[in-house]
Image (cartoon, rainbow, N blue to C red; front, top):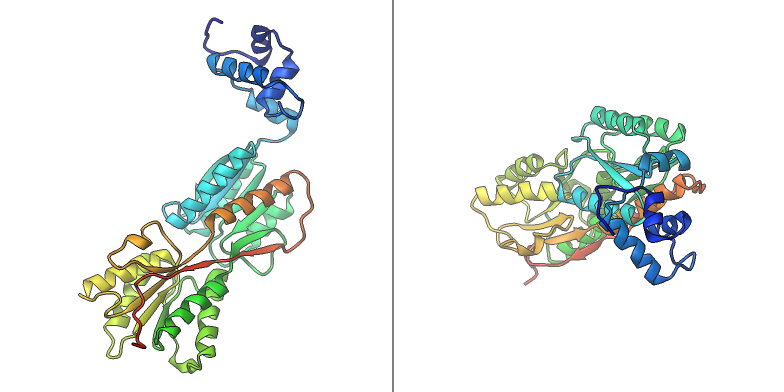
Length: 343
């Protein structure tokens, strides 16, 4: 067969001496469903590659009344936590025949709303959003307009659409309890955005673990106001320079943890000799730091998979239960950043 720049479906079928229907079924991944021979499927795919065949996506979208695209909005794509989730969303979407548009809201509600409007104007079939701020009104509005929506990581109490997040409470409880088991009672918690759902649940996990260990409420140390490196650095510096510093710090995000590590280094201290440290969120580097870090791992692969499933269920017309809220279990990784004070 003579190679050319491009070819349409009818011409491709003619080159192969096959029906347009057969070729279309192969290219749409339905060869097994229609019992098309493996040799025929291979011939079609090889020819499509040789002739650089690509379907007319615009025409297909008009026919199906779908763009086969999903918009994904996260607060900070450079944050490894969100970039890994996006990677998993993109992979699963591709497996299901959907392309993904990615938007970075820069942790700004105005930018988040602008991205929602932009993706809507581009006729995406659904949205997966890791929201910022403390208001859900704009999310409710887009959902009530008929747009399939799933939110991940953070949540609100007044939404009817699906939410996929981690079991933040249990993860924080487990981390705090591990510090308590190792003899730490003066544990400082550096929190993120106050009143956000993940932060509230993590703080409560810390508080309940301390309460179970009979630590008086007035002995709890809760500081900080954002899930940022700067917050971790500023708060850890203040804590470690105090007259009676904590023996352990529990950082409620991977970025906060980086700030804490910077403060520890700048003050000439060493973890865990001078201060023990636990991080909420596992990172690729966690096990490879000078002192391997004890972490709470969120299942980013499962979050991405479930989010895609829920948004495609809505796109395909499935009526999901109102207020569907899925909390995915976390996992603790015990390493060397906790000093045992019981010895």
